[in-house]
Amino acid sequence: MPTQITKQRFDAFTFGIRGDGEDKIWQDVSYWSTHGGEALAALFYVEKADAFLGAIFLRDDHQRFRVFPPLVPFRTKRAGEASIVEKLASIEGRKTALNRPDCEGGPGVDLFTVTHDAPLNPIFENICDSEHSRAAKEMLSEIGHWFEDRDGNFVRDFQTTGTSARLWELYLFRVFRDLGFNIDPAAASPDFALSKDELKLFVEATTANSGDQKYIDLMAGPAPRPDDFWRFIENDMPIIFGSPLYTKQKKEYWKKEPVKGNPFAIAIADFHAPGSMTWSHIALSIYLYGVSVSRVPGPDGKDIAIAKPLGTHKKGDKEIPAGFFSQPGTEHISAVIFSNAGTKAKFTRMGTLAGFGGIDMAVRRAGVLSNPEPGALDGIRFDINVENPEYHENWRDELEIYHNPNALIPWPDETVTPGATHFKEEDGELVWRGRPFRVLTSSTVVEKRPPFSEADKLL
Image 1 (cartoon, rainbow, N blue to C red):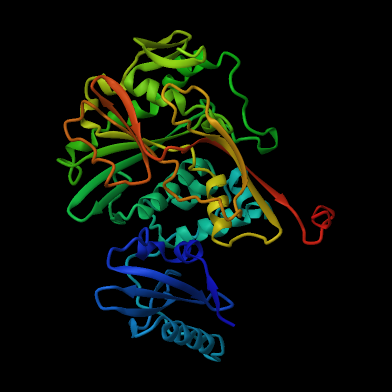
Image 2: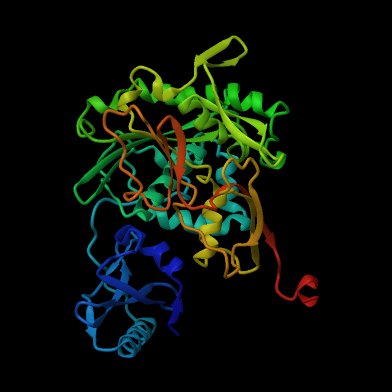
């Protein structure tokens, strides 16, 4: 029997053709699926025509859902939904194979079929085999259908030595689609050639990694915050971020076509230690702008933050200048993009919201929200079940864009990437614009809770 599904689930299958789904002409009304998920349907309302349009979506030979057959108009919502249910029921009852829509572009990637003998990364094995990771695996599989491998090594890297770096690229791919960008699959360097209307943007992805490149011990858990935390944040961590940023800067993408004359950004994520991205992000703005913070008593006696300019960062015998955006050559870099959410946890939460994963897996997210009070040093703690109706999450939520105040070609303003947090230098002060209560750091816990457990009997 056909069933109605959520927008999150529908978008998980169709994001490659729908972007963020926020079309100014069409209004989404409802979404449907056959029982086995081999066909989807949606009903849209077009205000200009005062009519409803129904669409059936089937997988093509690349396993991507596309519209098939053409859109059908209806006078009323009820007529449209009745027709959708009838059509999907007939598909469920078919005895022959379904026709497939025509393919567009090259095939995507099969992330979880292993065709080599190289040692597998424990993170990949956890995503591939653990029932706690099933929601993430199913979400990644759908994203993989739309992601085209430009160098032929993506899947092998994802399964072996480059799991974290490839997760970061898959996350960015999904976020850019969520923001409504078209992504040129033929562009091999830099990693992402984005377009929206007449605007063209280019992004190269990189990661901060551990020096020894050892596989992560998943049983050891996240790395604790360093004992001398602020010394580490003001010195060690900027050097950790600085190395991959400088490496990408030396490649001078902005001199090459088609980047030349367009905004260019480097997107960086931190994987230098297990779970380090939950506490290391503070250091990025310190390094980019050369300004830290000091705690001083406020008028009411509570500590507040004030700017603390830095000159250098020191780690052992190594010393680098503070303020990446002030260094020669960086004027060609329009922005640095960051997120601490390019990890399995993000795919788990978004997969769960889309209805993926085992039905007995409870997913909770706990962490710290930004505090919108001026000068606030402490965030606001939260702890919530991601399937709680009050919980909402988008792919772009954790995305941070640090604008280079010295850029020859500035990165576009907030209207081009709404929902992200933007950091800018204005009148000599660092300001940020975005949602007032954004997630600064969080952890995600997946717990198996079988039906009719002892815990459930107490409710």
